[in-house]
Length: 346
Ligand SMILES: Cc1ncc(COP(=O)(O)O)c(C=O)c1O
Image (cartoon, rainbow, N blue to C red):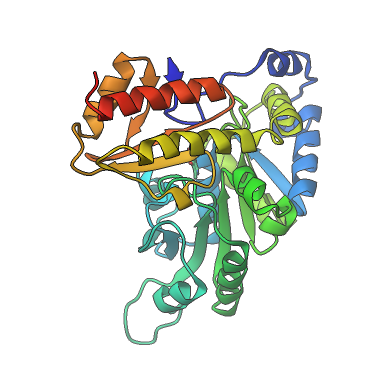
């Protein structure tokens, strides 16, 4: 199978497994895990933040961040179809008690949108839920791995500060964004109060995300992590995988981007396929079927029968993601399979 359902499907490489097996470990909750401590220090420095905190998943990192930066009843401005609003099974409402207001558009938004859509925090008469947080997803998953232009991010965060809103970056794929913009990770994270990066996506580790920010916010995040059941013990084995991924898999991300682009170009030539090639910037390809021979579930099924796995995001919308475990040749083969089905040749 050529598995393009997500970049989370990668398996640890033999070298990563060896690093995990050899890692010195200790009890995380006593602060005794040397491999974890070293990783948290390394990542805080890389992201230019005072402190950082490992969590088992990106979802938990997003939920912890919401609980640290908001209060129940608050309103959060968030990109359309953001992960926190669409893929955390209602966790943002259940865990943090917030409502997410999606900013219409295609994953990106502007400082003017924030100014227009932020509800006042101290409205004297109207019973408005106060907006207290702006969240950016970079790259944006459901909108095809789009990269937020750095100047736009800076303007949004400056406006947020002016309006007394906190700022949070869901940077599960910040690594991919920086590979495109050429920005350092620290510069990309500088405008935000709290940031999250994930190791289990394009970097290929089996688990782990890190929240980074000022020490006081990270201290509060430690309590929230425990409340949500994320305080684990000998996590050094996972930390070793994350550290290995950072050292060995970061520099190769442009390969995934090139592979995604090659598939997208083949799809764009198919009649009935709608795809904005200029938006295929990283490792995610989202496309729509318009008057094609099959619908999205039909294409998923047909591709599976021929050894290619992709995901339907809706009746006519599909997503495929390139990663460490698929080569250029695999991607060419996958593109050929999809094109044959769309051309009605099978
Ligand atoms: C943008 C984004 N944020 C957060 C997450 C959640 O990460 P996890 O699957 O580790 O919970 C994902 C997962 O794909 C994601 O794409």
